[in-house]
Length: 269
Image 1: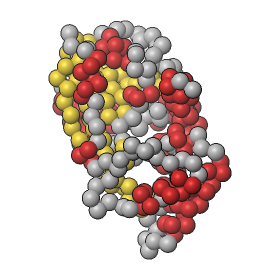
Image 2: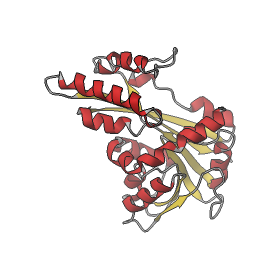
Image 3: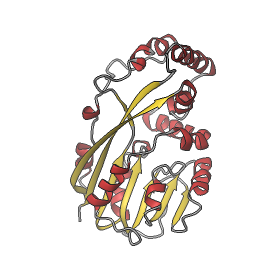
Image 4: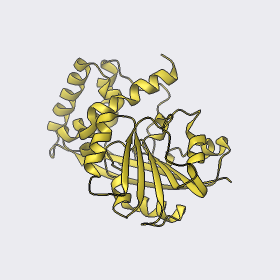
Protein backbone atom coordinates (compact mmCIF):
# COMPACT_ATOMS: atom_id res chain seq x y z
CA UNK A 1 0.00 0.00 0.00
CA UNK A 2 1.43 3.40 -0.97
CA UNK A 3 1.69 6.21 1.59
CA UNK A 4 -1.09 8.10 -0.20
CA UNK A 5 -3.37 5.05 -0.32
CA UNK A 6 -2.66 4.23 3.31
CA UNK A 7 -3.37 7.79 4.39
CA UNK A 8 -6.63 7.78 2.44
CA UNK A 9 -7.77 4.47 3.94
CA UNK A 10 -6.92 5.43 7.51
CA UNK A 11 -8.40 8.92 7.39
CA UNK A 12 -11.75 7.44 6.40
CA UNK A 13 -11.84 5.20 9.50
CA UNK A 14 -12.86 8.12 11.73
CA UNK A 15 -16.28 8.33 10.12
CA UNK A 16 -17.36 5.20 11.96
CA UNK A 17 -16.61 6.84 15.30
CA UNK A 18 -18.28 10.20 14.62
CA UNK A 19 -20.32 10.58 17.80
CA UNK A 20 -17.77 8.83 20.00
CA UNK A 21 -15.06 11.21 18.75
CA UNK A 22 -16.94 14.23 20.08
CA UNK A 23 -17.54 12.57 23.44
CA UNK A 24 -14.15 10.94 24.01
CA UNK A 25 -11.53 13.23 22.51
CA UNK A 26 -10.18 15.93 24.84
CA UNK A 27 -11.13 19.58 24.62
CA UNK A 28 -8.29 21.85 23.58
CA UNK A 29 -7.33 24.34 26.32
CA UNK A 30 -8.96 27.75 26.33
CA UNK A 31 -5.53 29.39 26.40
CA UNK A 32 -4.88 27.97 22.92
CA UNK A 33 -7.82 29.84 21.41
CA UNK A 34 -6.83 33.06 23.14
CA UNK A 35 -3.30 32.71 21.73
CA UNK A 36 -4.63 31.87 18.26
CA UNK A 37 -6.89 34.92 18.12
CA UNK A 38 -4.13 37.18 19.36
CA UNK A 39 -1.39 35.87 17.08
CA UNK A 40 -3.58 35.93 13.96
CA UNK A 41 -5.18 39.27 14.86
CA UNK A 42 -8.65 37.81 14.44
CA UNK A 43 -11.79 39.89 14.95
CA UNK A 44 -14.85 38.05 16.26
CA UNK A 45 -18.10 38.88 14.44
CA UNK A 46 -16.06 40.15 11.46
CA UNK A 47 -13.57 37.59 10.17
CA UNK A 48 -14.32 34.54 8.02
CA UNK A 49 -12.47 31.32 8.95
CA UNK A 50 -11.99 28.03 7.09
CA UNK A 51 -11.51 24.81 9.04
CA UNK A 52 -9.89 21.79 7.39
CA UNK A 53 -10.97 18.38 8.70
CA UNK A 54 -13.65 19.59 11.09
CA UNK A 55 -14.60 16.18 12.44
CA UNK A 56 -17.63 16.57 14.72
CA UNK A 57 -16.76 20.20 15.49
CA UNK A 58 -14.44 19.75 18.46
CA UNK A 59 -12.28 22.78 17.64
CA UNK A 60 -15.06 24.65 15.85
CA UNK A 61 -17.39 25.22 18.79
CA UNK A 62 -15.07 27.49 20.85
CA UNK A 63 -14.58 29.75 17.82
CA UNK A 64 -18.24 29.65 16.80
CA UNK A 65 -19.18 30.77 20.32
CA UNK A 66 -16.97 33.82 19.80
CA UNK A 67 -19.04 34.84 16.79
CA UNK A 68 -16.74 33.95 13.90
CA UNK A 69 -18.11 33.05 10.49
CA UNK A 70 -16.69 29.58 9.74
CA UNK A 71 -16.77 27.32 6.70
CA UNK A 72 -15.98 23.75 7.77
CA UNK A 73 -14.71 21.14 5.31
CA UNK A 74 -15.11 17.51 6.42
CA UNK A 75 -14.50 14.36 4.38
CA UNK A 76 -16.62 11.89 6.39
CA UNK A 77 -20.38 11.95 5.86
CA UNK A 78 -21.17 10.80 9.41
CA UNK A 79 -18.67 13.26 10.89
CA UNK A 80 -20.12 16.09 8.81
CA UNK A 81 -23.63 15.18 10.02
CA UNK A 82 -22.40 15.15 13.62
CA UNK A 83 -20.75 18.55 13.11
CA UNK A 84 -24.00 19.94 11.72
CA UNK A 85 -25.84 18.70 14.82
CA UNK A 86 -23.25 20.10 17.22
CA UNK A 87 -23.10 23.44 15.41
CA UNK A 88 -26.79 23.79 14.62
CA UNK A 89 -27.20 26.80 16.90
CA UNK A 90 -24.66 28.88 14.97
CA UNK A 91 -26.11 30.31 11.77
CA UNK A 92 -22.72 31.73 10.70
CA UNK A 93 -21.18 28.24 10.51
CA UNK A 94 -21.45 26.10 7.36
CA UNK A 95 -20.36 22.45 7.12
CA UNK A 96 -19.33 21.12 3.71
CA UNK A 97 -19.07 17.34 3.27
CA UNK A 98 -16.17 16.83 0.85
CA UNK A 99 -12.41 16.37 0.79
CA UNK A 100 -10.33 19.52 1.15
CA UNK A 101 -8.14 18.65 -1.82
CA UNK A 102 -10.96 18.80 -4.39
CA UNK A 103 -13.25 21.28 -2.60
CA UNK A 104 -14.27 24.27 -4.70
CA UNK A 105 -14.63 27.19 -2.26
CA UNK A 106 -17.20 29.95 -2.74
CA UNK A 107 -14.37 32.44 -3.25
CA UNK A 108 -10.59 32.52 -3.14
CA UNK A 109 -8.59 34.99 -1.09
CA UNK A 110 -11.40 35.74 1.37
CA UNK A 111 -10.51 33.91 4.58
CA UNK A 112 -8.72 35.54 7.51
CA UNK A 113 -7.65 32.13 8.84
CA UNK A 114 -7.31 28.58 7.55
CA UNK A 115 -6.92 26.19 10.46
CA UNK A 116 -6.72 22.45 11.15
CA UNK A 117 -6.90 20.74 14.53
CA UNK A 118 -5.47 17.20 14.57
CA UNK A 119 -6.24 16.92 10.86
CA UNK A 120 -3.54 18.57 8.72
CA UNK A 121 -1.41 15.41 8.48
CA UNK A 122 -4.30 13.66 6.69
CA UNK A 123 -4.32 16.20 3.84
CA UNK A 124 -2.29 15.54 0.69
CA UNK A 125 1.10 17.23 1.29
CA UNK A 126 1.35 18.13 -2.41
CA UNK A 127 -1.80 20.26 -2.15
CA UNK A 128 -2.44 21.49 1.37
CA UNK A 129 -0.15 24.53 1.69
CA UNK A 130 -0.82 25.86 -1.79
CA UNK A 131 -4.58 25.56 -1.36
CA UNK A 132 -4.49 27.20 2.08
CA UNK A 133 -2.47 30.09 0.59
CA UNK A 134 -5.02 30.52 -2.20
CA UNK A 135 -7.92 30.60 0.26
CA UNK A 136 -6.39 33.27 2.49
CA UNK A 137 -6.74 37.00 2.00
CA UNK A 138 -3.54 39.11 1.99
CA UNK A 139 -2.18 39.12 5.52
CA UNK A 140 -4.27 36.08 6.46
CA UNK A 141 -2.95 33.27 8.64
CA UNK A 142 -2.60 29.50 8.71
CA UNK A 143 -2.91 27.75 12.10
CA UNK A 144 -2.15 24.10 12.82
CA UNK A 145 -2.33 22.15 16.06
CA UNK A 146 -3.08 18.67 17.36
CA UNK A 147 -3.33 16.70 20.57
CA UNK A 148 -0.57 14.23 21.36
CA UNK A 149 0.18 11.87 24.21
CA UNK A 150 3.13 13.25 26.19
CA UNK A 151 5.09 11.88 29.12
CA UNK A 152 6.18 14.42 31.74
CA UNK A 153 8.46 13.54 34.61
CA UNK A 154 6.32 11.80 37.20
CA UNK A 155 3.72 10.79 34.62
CA UNK A 156 1.68 7.61 34.80
CA UNK A 157 3.84 4.50 34.06
CA UNK A 158 0.77 2.61 32.76
CA UNK A 159 1.46 3.42 29.11
CA UNK A 160 4.98 2.02 29.11
CA UNK A 161 3.83 -1.03 31.07
CA UNK A 162 0.97 -1.88 28.68
CA UNK A 163 3.33 -2.02 25.70
CA UNK A 164 3.93 -5.71 26.40
CA UNK A 165 0.32 -6.39 25.38
CA UNK A 166 0.70 -4.36 22.18
CA UNK A 167 3.84 -6.40 21.44
CA UNK A 168 1.96 -9.65 22.08
CA UNK A 169 -0.86 -8.84 19.63
CA UNK A 170 1.49 -7.67 16.90
CA UNK A 171 0.92 -3.94 17.37
CA UNK A 172 4.32 -2.99 18.73
CA UNK A 173 5.57 0.58 18.45
CA UNK A 174 8.07 1.27 15.64
CA UNK A 175 11.69 0.86 16.82
CA UNK A 176 12.45 4.60 16.71
CA UNK A 177 9.43 5.60 18.82
CA UNK A 178 10.18 7.83 21.81
CA UNK A 179 8.03 8.89 24.75
CA UNK A 180 8.15 12.66 24.32
CA UNK A 181 7.99 15.15 27.16
CA UNK A 182 5.60 18.10 26.65
CA UNK A 183 8.48 20.38 25.66
CA UNK A 184 9.80 17.83 23.15
CA UNK A 185 6.80 17.74 20.83
CA UNK A 186 7.86 18.64 17.31
CA UNK A 187 6.54 21.84 15.77
CA UNK A 188 5.80 22.42 12.07
CA UNK A 189 8.09 25.42 11.57
CA UNK A 190 10.44 23.69 9.11
CA UNK A 191 7.64 22.14 7.06
CA UNK A 192 5.72 25.42 6.84
CA UNK A 193 8.88 27.25 5.84
CA UNK A 194 9.73 24.65 3.19
CA UNK A 195 6.41 25.32 1.45
CA UNK A 196 7.67 28.84 0.67
CA UNK A 197 4.20 30.33 1.00
CA UNK A 198 4.08 31.47 4.63
CA UNK A 199 6.23 33.57 6.90
CA UNK A 200 6.48 34.74 10.53
CA UNK A 201 5.84 31.29 12.00
CA UNK A 202 5.05 31.53 15.72
CA UNK A 203 4.94 28.56 18.08
CA UNK A 204 3.05 28.18 21.37
CA UNK A 205 2.94 25.04 23.53
CA UNK A 206 0.25 23.81 25.91
CA UNK A 207 -0.16 20.68 28.03
CA UNK A 208 -2.75 19.31 30.42
CA UNK A 209 -3.75 16.09 32.23
CA UNK A 210 -6.97 14.06 32.13
CA UNK A 211 -7.89 11.12 34.38
CA UNK A 212 -9.65 8.16 32.83
CA UNK A 213 -11.53 5.12 34.04
CA UNK A 214 -10.94 1.93 32.06
CA UNK A 215 -14.15 2.44 30.10
CA UNK A 216 -13.56 6.12 29.31
CA UNK A 217 -10.01 5.31 28.21
CA UNK A 218 -11.22 2.50 25.95
CA UNK A 219 -13.74 4.90 24.39
CA UNK A 220 -10.84 7.24 23.68
CA UNK A 221 -8.81 4.44 22.06
CA UNK A 222 -11.78 3.63 19.85
CA UNK A 223 -11.38 7.06 18.21
CA UNK A 224 -7.77 6.43 17.06
CA UNK A 225 -7.30 5.13 13.54
CA UNK A 226 -4.84 2.43 14.57
CA UNK A 227 -7.21 0.96 17.13
CA UNK A 228 -10.26 1.27 14.87
CA UNK A 229 -8.38 -0.71 12.22
CA UNK A 230 -7.29 -3.48 14.62
CA UNK A 231 -8.76 -6.97 14.32
CA UNK A 232 -11.48 -7.56 16.89
CA UNK A 233 -9.50 -10.22 18.72
CA UNK A 234 -6.65 -7.77 19.21
CA UNK A 235 -8.95 -5.14 20.71
CA UNK A 236 -10.55 -7.77 22.96
CA UNK A 237 -7.17 -8.85 24.31
CA UNK A 238 -5.89 -5.30 24.77
CA UNK A 239 -9.05 -3.87 26.30
CA UNK A 240 -9.45 -6.83 28.62
CA UNK A 241 -5.94 -6.28 29.95
CA UNK A 242 -6.54 -2.53 30.37
CA UNK A 243 -9.63 -3.31 32.46
CA UNK A 244 -7.79 -5.91 34.53
CA UNK A 245 -4.78 -3.71 35.29
CA UNK A 246 -6.79 -0.63 36.17
CA UNK A 247 -9.12 -2.66 38.38
CA UNK A 248 -6.04 -3.50 40.46
CA UNK A 249 -5.38 0.17 41.19
CA UNK A 250 -6.93 1.63 44.35
CA UNK A 251 -8.73 4.42 42.47
CA UNK A 252 -9.15 2.49 39.20
CA UNK A 253 -7.86 5.48 37.21
CA UNK A 254 -5.01 6.29 34.84
CA UNK A 255 -3.54 9.71 34.17
CA UNK A 256 -2.97 10.64 30.52
CA UNK A 257 -1.01 13.80 29.80
CA UNK A 258 -1.82 15.68 26.61
CA UNK A 259 0.31 18.18 24.75
CA UNK A 260 -0.23 20.40 21.74
CA UNK A 261 1.87 22.72 19.62
CA UNK A 262 0.07 25.67 18.08
CA UNK A 263 1.72 26.80 14.82
CA UNK A 264 0.57 30.14 13.40
CA UNK A 265 2.03 31.53 10.17
CA UNK A 266 1.21 34.57 8.02
CA UNK A 267 0.49 34.30 4.31
CA UNK A 268 3.44 35.51 2.26
CA UNK A 269 2.12 37.98 -0.31
